[in-house]
Image (cartoon, rainbow, N blue to C red):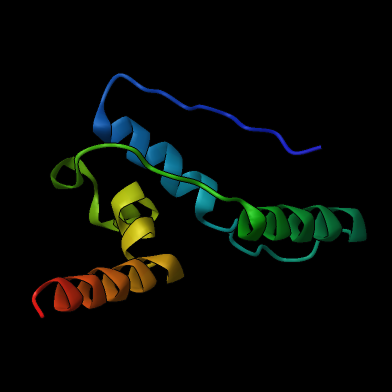
Length: 96
């Protein structure tokens, strides 16, 4: 089952800090036991699979989290280029 979680905070900086901690893999530490190593690997694996979207005005976001903003994800998606190409073709057809 997939969970969806909404995270809110009293300031943009606080939201950015939470997001950075969610998406940054935990640093490797010296091996203490096999169990700890397995737990760390699971945490790192989870952080790689985590899908996050940062909502907010891009001017108010930390540069470290800009890639997770809604605007950046839309701009970098495969469908955005397709839509842009279709708009251009349609405009060319209308101008004939």
